[in-house]
Length: 272
Image (tube, rainbow, N blue to C red; front, side, top):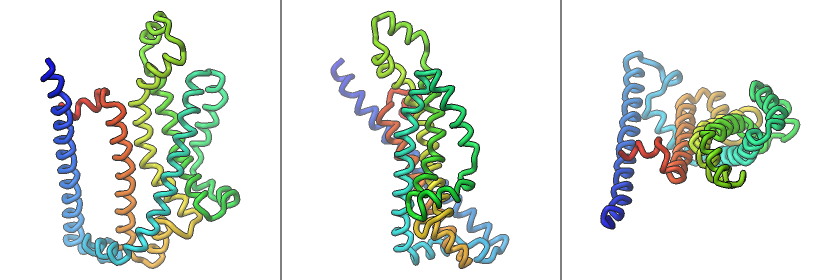
Protein backbone atom coordinates (compact mmCIF):
# COMPACT_ATOMS: atom_id res chain seq x y z
CA UNK A 1 0.00 0.00 0.00
CA UNK A 2 2.78 2.41 0.95
CA UNK A 3 4.59 1.66 -2.27
CA UNK A 4 1.45 2.40 -4.29
CA UNK A 5 0.98 5.74 -2.54
CA UNK A 6 4.58 6.67 -3.17
CA UNK A 7 4.41 5.67 -6.83
CA UNK A 8 1.25 7.61 -7.60
CA UNK A 9 2.73 11.16 -7.54
CA UNK A 10 5.68 10.05 -9.68
CA UNK A 11 3.34 8.55 -12.25
CA UNK A 12 1.11 11.62 -12.12
CA UNK A 13 3.92 14.08 -12.77
CA UNK A 14 5.56 11.91 -15.42
CA UNK A 15 2.25 11.67 -17.27
CA UNK A 16 1.83 15.41 -17.01
CA UNK A 17 5.37 15.92 -18.31
CA UNK A 18 4.58 13.70 -21.27
CA UNK A 19 1.47 15.80 -21.85
CA UNK A 20 3.57 18.97 -21.99
CA UNK A 21 5.94 17.36 -24.49
CA UNK A 22 3.03 16.37 -26.71
CA UNK A 23 1.52 19.86 -26.50
CA UNK A 24 4.85 21.45 -27.37
CA UNK A 25 5.28 19.11 -30.34
CA UNK A 26 1.86 19.94 -31.79
CA UNK A 27 2.38 23.66 -31.19
CA UNK A 28 5.69 23.55 -33.05
CA UNK A 29 4.15 21.48 -35.84
CA UNK A 30 1.28 23.96 -36.27
CA UNK A 31 3.79 26.83 -36.45
CA UNK A 32 5.81 25.04 -39.14
CA UNK A 33 2.64 24.33 -41.15
CA UNK A 34 1.58 27.99 -40.98
CA UNK A 35 5.02 29.19 -42.11
CA UNK A 36 5.16 26.69 -44.98
CA UNK A 37 1.66 27.62 -46.18
CA UNK A 38 2.54 31.31 -45.88
CA UNK A 39 5.66 30.82 -48.01
CA UNK A 40 3.73 28.79 -50.60
CA UNK A 41 0.98 31.40 -50.89
CA UNK A 42 3.53 34.15 -51.53
CA UNK A 43 5.36 32.04 -54.13
CA UNK A 44 2.30 30.64 -55.94
CA UNK A 45 0.32 33.88 -56.15
CA UNK A 46 3.35 36.13 -56.51
CA UNK A 47 2.34 38.69 -53.92
CA UNK A 48 4.67 41.71 -53.81
CA UNK A 49 6.49 42.36 -50.54
CA UNK A 50 4.46 45.44 -49.65
CA UNK A 51 1.25 43.37 -49.70
CA UNK A 52 2.36 40.06 -48.20
CA UNK A 53 6.03 39.71 -47.24
CA UNK A 54 7.76 36.35 -47.05
CA UNK A 55 8.37 34.87 -43.57
CA UNK A 56 12.12 35.40 -43.82
CA UNK A 57 11.56 39.09 -44.60
CA UNK A 58 9.40 39.38 -41.49
CA UNK A 59 12.07 37.69 -39.35
CA UNK A 60 14.72 40.01 -40.79
CA UNK A 61 12.58 43.06 -40.02
CA UNK A 62 12.03 41.92 -36.42
CA UNK A 63 15.79 41.40 -35.96
CA UNK A 64 16.52 44.78 -37.51
CA UNK A 65 14.11 46.61 -35.16
CA UNK A 66 14.66 44.30 -32.20
CA UNK A 67 15.66 46.97 -29.68
CA UNK A 68 12.67 49.17 -30.50
CA UNK A 69 10.27 46.22 -30.34
CA UNK A 70 11.61 45.02 -26.98
CA UNK A 71 11.52 48.51 -25.47
CA UNK A 72 7.94 49.08 -26.56
CA UNK A 73 6.90 45.53 -25.63
CA UNK A 74 7.56 46.39 -21.97
CA UNK A 75 5.15 49.34 -22.26
CA UNK A 76 2.42 47.15 -23.72
CA UNK A 77 3.08 44.31 -21.25
CA UNK A 78 2.82 46.68 -18.29
CA UNK A 79 -0.50 48.04 -19.57
CA UNK A 80 -1.81 44.51 -20.13
CA UNK A 81 -0.83 43.34 -16.64
CA UNK A 82 -2.19 46.44 -14.91
CA UNK A 83 -5.52 46.34 -16.75
CA UNK A 84 -5.89 42.60 -16.22
CA UNK A 85 -5.08 42.69 -12.50
CA UNK A 86 -7.45 45.62 -11.93
CA UNK A 87 -10.21 43.73 -13.76
CA UNK A 88 -9.71 40.65 -11.55
CA UNK A 89 -9.58 42.74 -8.35
CA UNK A 90 -12.88 44.47 -9.15
CA UNK A 91 -14.74 41.78 -11.12
CA UNK A 92 -14.51 38.87 -8.67
CA UNK A 93 -15.86 40.75 -5.60
CA UNK A 94 -18.66 42.28 -7.68
CA UNK A 95 -19.61 38.83 -9.00
CA UNK A 96 -19.67 37.49 -5.43
CA UNK A 97 -21.93 40.36 -4.32
CA UNK A 98 -24.26 39.74 -7.27
CA UNK A 99 -24.59 36.05 -6.36
CA UNK A 100 -25.06 36.70 -2.64
CA UNK A 101 -27.56 39.56 -2.92
CA UNK A 102 -30.48 39.71 -5.39
CA UNK A 103 -30.76 43.45 -4.67
CA UNK A 104 -27.16 44.02 -5.75
CA UNK A 105 -27.81 41.96 -8.88
CA UNK A 106 -30.82 44.11 -9.84
CA UNK A 107 -28.80 47.23 -9.14
CA UNK A 108 -25.51 46.39 -10.89
CA UNK A 109 -26.13 43.78 -13.58
CA UNK A 110 -28.13 45.94 -16.05
CA UNK A 111 -25.51 48.73 -16.07
CA UNK A 112 -22.75 46.15 -16.56
CA UNK A 113 -24.50 44.70 -19.61
CA UNK A 114 -25.25 48.17 -20.97
CA UNK A 115 -21.66 49.38 -20.68
CA UNK A 116 -20.38 46.19 -22.32
CA UNK A 117 -22.44 46.96 -25.44
CA UNK A 118 -20.60 50.27 -25.96
CA UNK A 119 -17.63 49.97 -28.36
CA UNK A 120 -14.52 50.83 -26.39
CA UNK A 121 -13.13 52.86 -29.28
CA UNK A 122 -16.16 55.14 -28.93
CA UNK A 123 -14.94 56.10 -25.46
CA UNK A 124 -11.69 57.49 -26.88
CA UNK A 125 -12.56 61.17 -26.41
CA UNK A 126 -13.49 60.58 -22.77
CA UNK A 127 -10.31 58.62 -22.05
CA UNK A 128 -8.17 61.33 -23.60
CA UNK A 129 -9.90 64.02 -21.53
CA UNK A 130 -9.74 62.00 -18.31
CA UNK A 131 -6.31 60.36 -18.57
CA UNK A 132 -4.40 62.13 -21.32
CA UNK A 133 -1.92 60.30 -23.55
CA UNK A 134 -0.19 58.26 -20.84
CA UNK A 135 -0.38 54.63 -19.83
CA UNK A 136 -3.62 55.25 -17.91
CA UNK A 137 -5.63 55.23 -21.14
CA UNK A 138 -4.23 51.83 -22.19
CA UNK A 139 -4.83 50.37 -18.73
CA UNK A 140 -8.40 51.69 -18.69
CA UNK A 141 -9.31 50.11 -22.03
CA UNK A 142 -7.70 46.79 -21.06
CA UNK A 143 -9.62 46.89 -17.77
CA UNK A 144 -12.98 47.50 -19.47
CA UNK A 145 -12.49 44.72 -22.02
CA UNK A 146 -11.37 42.17 -19.40
CA UNK A 147 -13.92 43.06 -16.74
CA UNK A 148 -17.14 41.65 -18.19
CA UNK A 149 -16.08 38.07 -19.08
CA UNK A 150 -14.53 37.63 -15.64
CA UNK A 151 -17.72 38.83 -13.94
CA UNK A 152 -20.02 36.64 -16.03
CA UNK A 153 -17.97 33.43 -15.72
CA UNK A 154 -17.48 33.94 -11.98
CA UNK A 155 -21.24 34.36 -11.52
CA UNK A 156 -21.91 31.21 -13.56
CA UNK A 157 -19.37 29.27 -11.51
CA UNK A 158 -20.69 30.41 -8.15
CA UNK A 159 -24.24 29.47 -9.15
CA UNK A 160 -23.38 26.11 -10.70
CA UNK A 161 -22.95 24.21 -7.44
CA UNK A 162 -25.45 21.44 -6.72
CA UNK A 163 -28.09 22.81 -4.27
CA UNK A 164 -28.23 19.43 -2.52
CA UNK A 165 -24.60 19.88 -1.45
CA UNK A 166 -25.44 23.22 0.14
CA UNK A 167 -28.45 21.71 1.92
CA UNK A 168 -26.31 18.85 3.17
CA UNK A 169 -23.68 21.27 4.50
CA UNK A 170 -26.34 23.34 6.26
CA UNK A 171 -27.86 20.24 7.81
CA UNK A 172 -24.43 19.43 9.23
CA UNK A 173 -24.19 22.87 10.83
CA UNK A 174 -21.83 24.57 8.36
CA UNK A 175 -21.89 28.37 8.50
CA UNK A 176 -22.57 30.44 5.33
CA UNK A 177 -18.93 31.55 5.33
CA UNK A 178 -17.68 27.97 5.49
CA UNK A 179 -20.13 26.89 2.78
CA UNK A 180 -18.82 29.65 0.53
CA UNK A 181 -15.14 28.89 1.15
CA UNK A 182 -15.41 25.09 1.04
CA UNK A 183 -18.15 24.55 -1.56
CA UNK A 184 -19.05 27.55 -3.68
CA UNK A 185 -15.61 29.00 -4.29
CA UNK A 186 -13.80 25.73 -5.15
CA UNK A 187 -16.72 24.68 -7.34
CA UNK A 188 -16.62 28.03 -9.15
CA UNK A 189 -12.88 27.91 -9.94
CA UNK A 190 -13.18 26.03 -13.27
CA UNK A 191 -15.65 28.60 -14.64
CA UNK A 192 -13.64 31.45 -13.17
CA UNK A 193 -10.51 30.24 -14.91
CA UNK A 194 -12.46 30.03 -18.15
CA UNK A 195 -13.21 33.74 -17.83
CA UNK A 196 -9.66 34.52 -16.75
CA UNK A 197 -8.22 32.78 -19.82
CA UNK A 198 -10.57 34.62 -22.17
CA UNK A 199 -9.72 37.90 -20.47
CA UNK A 200 -5.97 37.19 -20.71
CA UNK A 201 -6.19 37.37 -24.50
CA UNK A 202 -8.61 40.30 -24.45
CA UNK A 203 -6.22 42.26 -22.22
CA UNK A 204 -3.70 42.41 -25.06
CA UNK A 205 -6.43 43.61 -27.42
CA UNK A 206 -7.47 46.25 -24.89
CA UNK A 207 -3.96 47.58 -24.38
CA UNK A 208 -3.42 47.68 -28.14
CA UNK A 209 -6.70 49.56 -28.60
CA UNK A 210 -5.59 52.07 -25.97
CA UNK A 211 -2.34 52.58 -27.86
CA UNK A 212 -4.29 53.24 -31.03
CA UNK A 213 -6.43 55.79 -29.22
CA UNK A 214 -3.74 57.87 -27.56
CA UNK A 215 -0.13 56.83 -27.14
CA UNK A 216 3.38 57.64 -28.26
CA UNK A 217 4.83 54.28 -27.20
CA UNK A 218 4.01 50.58 -27.17
CA UNK A 219 3.55 47.96 -29.85
CA UNK A 220 0.38 49.64 -31.07
CA UNK A 221 2.34 52.82 -31.72
CA UNK A 222 4.89 50.81 -33.73
CA UNK A 223 2.03 49.32 -35.77
CA UNK A 224 0.71 52.78 -36.58
CA UNK A 225 4.19 54.03 -37.51
CA UNK A 226 4.89 50.97 -39.69
CA UNK A 227 1.52 51.38 -41.39
CA UNK A 228 2.28 55.00 -42.20
CA UNK A 229 5.64 53.99 -43.67
CA UNK A 230 4.10 51.04 -45.61
CA UNK A 231 6.55 48.74 -43.83
CA UNK A 232 4.50 45.56 -44.13
CA UNK A 233 7.30 43.31 -42.91
CA UNK A 234 7.51 45.22 -39.62
CA UNK A 235 3.70 45.17 -39.36
CA UNK A 236 3.64 41.38 -39.58
CA UNK A 237 6.57 41.12 -37.19
CA UNK A 238 4.84 43.21 -34.52
CA UNK A 239 1.63 41.23 -35.00
CA UNK A 240 3.56 38.02 -34.37
CA UNK A 241 5.11 39.53 -31.23
CA UNK A 242 1.62 40.49 -30.03
CA UNK A 243 0.40 36.96 -30.69
CA UNK A 244 3.30 35.52 -28.68
CA UNK A 245 2.54 37.95 -25.85
CA UNK A 246 -1.12 36.90 -25.79
CA UNK A 247 -0.13 33.21 -25.82
CA UNK A 248 2.29 33.73 -22.92
CA UNK A 249 -0.46 35.31 -20.81
CA UNK A 250 -2.96 32.63 -21.77
CA UNK A 251 -0.69 29.70 -20.93
CA UNK A 252 0.44 31.38 -17.71
CA UNK A 253 -3.19 31.43 -16.56
CA UNK A 254 -3.63 27.85 -17.77
CA UNK A 255 -0.57 26.77 -15.76
CA UNK A 256 -2.02 28.49 -12.68
CA UNK A 257 -5.27 26.62 -13.32
CA UNK A 258 -3.42 23.28 -13.42
CA UNK A 259 -1.73 24.09 -10.11
CA UNK A 260 -4.88 25.24 -8.28
CA UNK A 261 -7.49 22.78 -9.54
CA UNK A 262 -5.67 19.55 -10.44
CA UNK A 263 -8.71 17.66 -9.13
CA UNK A 264 -11.03 18.96 -11.89
CA UNK A 265 -11.96 16.59 -14.72
CA UNK A 266 -10.56 18.98 -17.34
CA UNK A 267 -7.11 18.62 -15.74
CA UNK A 268 -7.24 14.92 -14.90
CA UNK A 269 -8.12 14.09 -18.51
CA UNK A 270 -4.72 15.44 -19.63
CA UNK A 271 -2.77 12.90 -17.61
CA UNK A 272 -4.74 9.76 -18.36
